[in-house]
Length: 255
Image 1: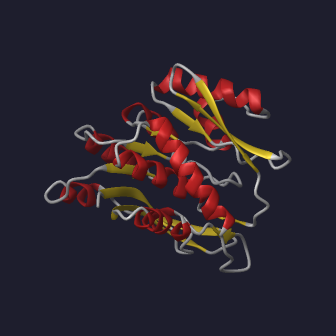
Image 2: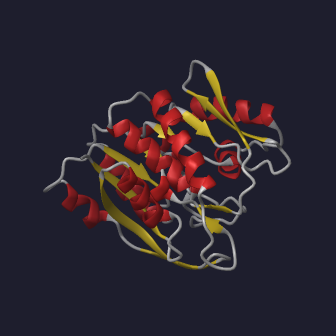
């Protein structure tokens, strides 16, 4: 059993964030450690409020006790938390997966207005970044309207931030396939899956980044970790379930 740390926000609806991460980590048989960056008031239909929480002491106390095999970073929200995490990971020697939670899959901003510049300085310190289409647009300044734009965005992010990128392609609603692009600075590789007709996708990004962290904790290289994680996440979407009147959640415990 490995200790896998998730640094992220709490999702009061239970589908994504810390809650989704812990379910994913548990499905691998690992122990989940947490550092909570924000508490949200949300349900299956909307995010109503975000309250930041200082993360410094939560991180510092980890070093007194635990050997951490991998880290997943999700929503940091505030400049203060971004800077705290950036300083703390300087001393890490384990894989770190950063899901740059800047905006949701619907385009809703999930970061304070002045925090985008700060988060860009964090990107070069991690092992992999996993942005969605909208986040990639904010990180590159490029509009992404088609698949060719995704490849160009991957190359630009690696050029800017010197970190491998998995750009998630699940936000082209008219496409028959969901295609993710992976670029490590050498080769572009694609992961194509037939689009699942599901209304239960809340937590997909959190589940994926946490699953990659778990795969890396087991000693896999980044490419093989992505392959293993995507197989599990596809299953989690397939067996997703409804909890309220809005979007359903992925079933991370099924993976």
